[in-house]
Amino acid sequence: MNISPRRPLFNRQPQPNIYRMFLWVIMLLGGIWILQQISRGDIKPLFQPTPTPTRSPDSLKLEGEAFFSAGNVNAAIQAYRAAVDVNPNDANTWMELARIQTYSSAFLITNDQKKARLTEALESATKAAELAPDNSAAHAIRAFALDWNANSNFRTTEEVQNFLRDAEAESLTALQLDNSNTLALVYYAEVLLDQQKWDQADLTIKQALAQDDTLMDVHRVNAAVLETFGQYNLAITEWDKAIAIEPNFTFLYTRAGANYRILAFDIASRQGIEAARPTYEKSLEYFDKAVRINEQIGVKDPGPHLSIARTYSQLGEYFAAARNVQKALEYEPTNPDIYGQLGIVYFRSRNYEGSIFSFKCATYGCSGEDSCKGRGLERCFPDLNENPVDVPGLAISPNTIVYYYTYGSVLSALSRPRANQCDEAMKVMNDVRTELRNNPDNYIDGRETILSIVQAGEAICASLADGGAPVPTVTSEASGGVTATPTP
Image (tube, rainbow, N blue to C red; front, side, top):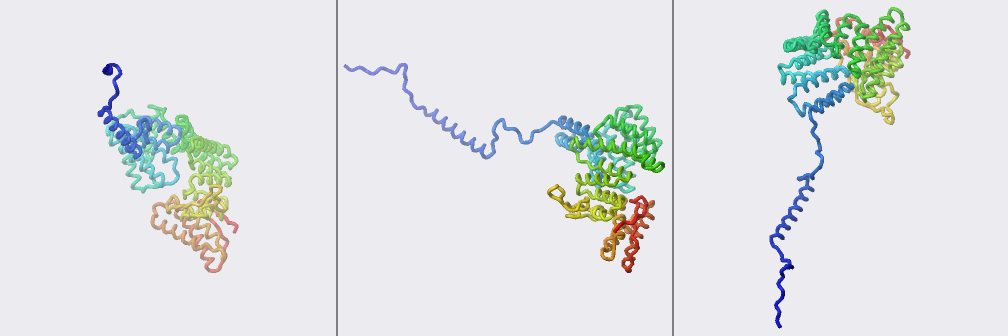
């Protein structure tokens, strides 16, 4: 009997589906393509962190404020620069950057460094004033930057007057926009002080004090006004108030310490060194606080060490003075001005031979082993991180001419028939004479003294050329006008 097969009512046999197969092929090819793109870098994997995360300007400004309050002005500048990069149209950020850049120049040593930083500060302040022309604070900070740019150490007399004129105009604009702006009054008082309008500066800063005595800037400028009137004890009180507000600003400590040093020098001139020693030690306390603050925040600032060196020099403790200048050179081994200051310390301690290499680095520059000898080392010791460096010389100017004529004086005084250094000495003396001849207005007060030093050195070399052997003497303003006879 033929029985037909049962129909698959519930168990249907699987059959191939051409559309499903086509979809799987497409998905497989797509996956292969995506993997290829990831390997080539055209597609980034999900949840991968961005290589340069973008921070908000407010976050960067808060970081800058924290660094500034901590006394780390370079880190503060970097934070504010990052903030203006993110939001270049924020006038307030440009204002704060300009203010910090201006103050940061007080931590720098050479005139070239100061000039460059203050030029940057003025550019930032100008940008702020352009973005907010009706903002009193923007004009006040621009007046501040203009005033600090009016520095005769690296500006001509005409430039100084132009900067001061513009600073006064900016101050008055700030006060016209808001006559209750205390900072505008403060910076106006500072401009008046630099214009030698002392009584008017005194009245203006007193007005600012009456208006708001919680600002560091108020006490800083008031201290500067008091210094001008020779009221150093009162000035120290104001510096202390400024320090209480900004306890990590090391330049405030160095200014207060400098006032103590002035008082100590006056006491020493009338009563002797021992009577002045407690005041000198008070000066050293302030400088030491600045050093400790820098160590805590990791700032390698040579300034406080140089202030300590000057104090020890006045005490006649030249070994301690030299050690502190050498410490400053550890921070900035290519800074020629610090080499010059070390040369002066050696000169005053009658270490004439040692001063030669330091003065050489300061004036005409040095490199290799000479740079190490200029730091007071016997030679370079790379294992001790005392490496040779290239030191650019300082151009001769009113601020550096002391290094030149003292260098020439030492070279001539130590010259002997068998160790004649007069070729170099005469070159230095000629450069000094050329500077005095070309820029007579810069040396009205000290020209005759400098010429007498040059002439003494020239006379020694002339005697050697004639076969004579005069007793060598070294006379320099650097030694306080004292004539010393070095030991060959």
